[in-house]
Length: 167
Picture (cartoon, rainbow, N blue to C red):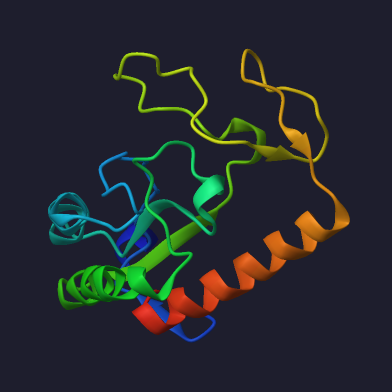
């Protein structure tokens, strides 16, 4: 148990302790995927609580890869100012800022669960096949070009994440 509160260094990144806050979808960003003050307060409070790492929720690498329109994104340089502010705030509070890059695939295109018509799709989804997930609308099976574009989107999002200050 004593190791839980001791520092840990992984690949040159030192964590003050071994407590990490897992990503939790908040569905509270602007419709364009830009994080809001909510994210600063929510994640900042976890950092102030002493966690060694705080990870930002599933952050879409393309707009159509979001679970809902309320999901955070990092598919554009327009997202950088808010993400930079968030990563810097978390670091200033003594935690390692991290981010979960994501593409919801066949589980995408839902409204926030508390909204009317939550199950109604908002945009076309992509998946590894045309098989639906549960009661979701069947996705369009990804082509090789779709797969290549998605890989490139993850690469670009990774570069933006590093530029913003996520470790």
